[in-house]
Amino acid sequence: MSEYKSGSNLEKVLRAGHFAFTGECGPPQGANVEHLKEKAGHLKGCVDAVNVTDNQTAVVRMSSWAASIILLQEGLEPNFQMVCRDRNRLAIQSDILGVYSLGIRDMLCLSGDHQKFGNHPEAKNVFDIDSMQLIHTVKTMRDEGKFLNGQDIDAPPELFIGAASNPFAEPFDFRVYRLAKKISAGADFIQTQCIYNMDKFREFIKRAVDMGLHEKCYILAGVTPMKSVGMALYMAKQVPGMDVPDTLIKRLRGAGKGKVAEEGIKFALEQIEEFKEMEGVAGVHLMAIEWEHKVPEIAERAGMLPRPTV
Amino acid sequence: MIRSITQQKPEEELDQLLEGLGRIFIIGCGTCVTLTQTGGGPEVAKMKEKLSQKGKMITGDVVVPVACDNLTREALDEYGGRIDQADALLIMTCAFGVQTIARQMKKMVVPALDTLFIGKETSLGEFNEICTQCGTCILGETGGICPVTSCHKGLVNGPCGGTNNGKCEIDNDKECAWTLIYNRLNELNRLDAMRKLQKPRNHQGELSPGKWTSKLEI
Image 1 (cartoon, rainbow over the protein chains, first blue to last red):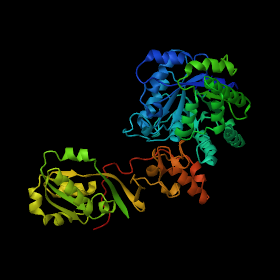
Image 2: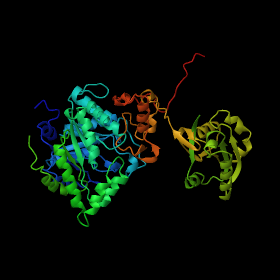
Image 3: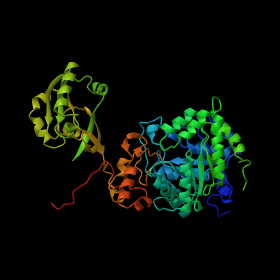
Image 4: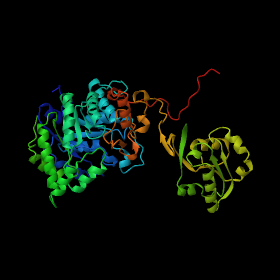
């Protein structure tokens, strides 16, 4: 159907009004294709698309486009992530054409974690363009059929354009405007940072709805189940822009030995139940970090199965 | 006043650079490196002592007034004999000074310092990089604070998701440039400037290495 922007499964599910459910899969730190296939296999049939991260936290891994193609061959829909840290505008545009040519239809545009966090901190970063400009680049290539220099593209890449939003980083008042800016730059869907502070997220989404942003773009709420108290403390203290309330940490601690992971999943399930009813939220993006094998169970218990076919 | 900000090279690296060079002439500078206490009189004296202890012969030393000035040649001429005796010049100035001296003297030069950035002393003993001379100034749209320089990712469309209590996610000692810009534009009632999409920057303002010829009629 030509009215679709890319005709991806994710776009079709969202357009049909279903509550979308996306997952995530980090490529291996090596060429272990079997391990990647095994991790991705857990997500098959459980989610509408799988984010394939691009050297996340600035740690070198198999390239996101190559891992995306492997997922595609395995019958999953990849949401190809691209960061601006490692490529200039020439490489960015050529990779966009490349992934589209190989069958990728969803793409998430990110600035990228600073290399200082990663395993090559001495590297030089690029940041020729930023995430906002990357979104606009993909939109310009798709809708106007032009490169950044204004030159015509013979066959434009038709991609469903995603962007990230962190409702919790300061300045809080600006974050909804930054979201609006990403939407006007060309974002078709948004996946938020992991949400733990529900009060703050409710306020954020209310502001987005008041501005009518949910009618211009699909907003998927980010959920990462806590596996342990240690993980919660790490997220709270070490991950910039992450907001983990003390009440959640207390709740996990109170679960008792051997039951923390289950408590983390329960909290995630409660969140998903609330998101289903929350005005402005079009789906959930589940980032089960190195916990892919738990996704079928979480999807089942969250009432997300079977996934719709459109 | 803007300054060239330097720090001393690690001792191990300097030892390697000076390996096999027995006779050394040391040059400091009376301007930026004196302010940063990396290559002024006291630092030159300390270096002289340290290298003597390591068995080097110091043929002489001098703190020239402004190492990057072409007049440095004249200041060094007075030390001609002592410089001639040296295997190498150990230069405790910024890289502008090192290159000026290298161009003027037919001698092997060894930099004792690493040049970090061109910056400004923002409070006593604290120096900040505030301009990277990118060639395409956007300060008119950011309340006079430069994100190209002050944001670690050089973002021009607002803060990334890692703002950490107003500090940069990669360094708690550094302000988040976009938080500063937000606060300044808020004060000026010009937050609308942050809502506008900034197009990709033109990195061709002046191709590095820069070269510019005065258009004045002579």
